[in-house]
Image (cartoon, rainbow, N blue to C red; front, top):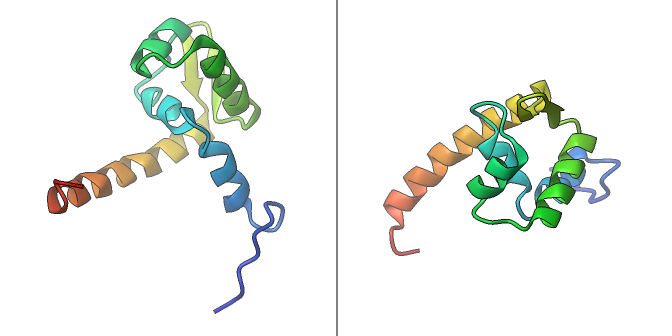
Length: 104
């Protein structure tokens, strides 16, 4: 097995995990998977994240080109939609896991 390097430049997954691992980032992507959502509705969907934190995460996700601002609110880009599809698979896995471990 090849030795793993941990620098983000050598391994894009590390850079991506660092970015998406920030609180609310994946939740924002999850909430946008059904279409554009305006800032206030996105904040409500994210269970009361503070406006400043939401604004920061939205800015970071826009910089990563995972979301974009539209006339109808924030929406996933094509890369964001591709990522969201993987989150749907992860959700399926999580549901199976929860059934096997209900008290965890």
